[in-house]
Amino acid sequence: MDHIIQFDRQVFLIINGMHSPFFDFLMFWLSDKFIWIPLYAVLLFLMIRQSPARWWLILISIALLVTITDQVSVKAFKDVFLRLRPCHEPLLEGMVRILNEHCGGKYGFVSSHATNTFGMAVFSGLMLKKRFGWVLPALLVWAGIISYSRIYLGVHYPGDVLAGGAVGALIGWAVFRLYRLADTGVQGKSHRSIH
Figure 1 (cartoon, rainbow, N blue to C red):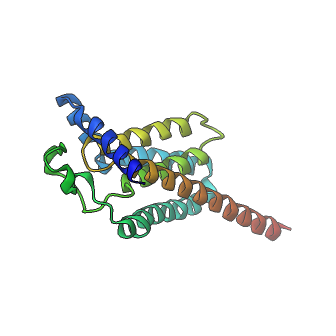
Figure 2 (cartoon, rainbow, N blue to C red):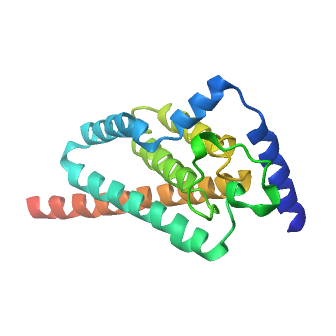
């Protein structure tokens, strides 16, 4: 385990050490969760347009997804593993580049940004897969870039974002399966009420 942690730190220092003014600006901008509200609005619009009668089920599923990814990343990981963020790690003092003096909370395993974005990417991509087959791969790339930005900015180790991405993707898939299950149940009820 010590070898994995050492490797994680070394990869972090390489990524965090590669910088330029342009990428400093870009990565800080990409990491801002509010900048992505228009994208979320477009995804929601496309999902509801695809299944207008299920708008309420889509909204419930997204609320469930956001709640689970957010709570799991903090309560089941950060509060359990207590792994310091690299910007809070005494062993790395003076070695970590932090932009705009922003480090975040004390603990970083797993990355909530990675969990949330991969959860949304997988759920939205699966929801829109039939009409827009390219959306899932595009959203996975988007989530990967945001996750990378967290390493670049000095607030997460690569292991934090890899684990966060895996957890988020799993939650996104599970919420999609729940949506499909609930949708089948709703269709069955409406079909029975017609006859």
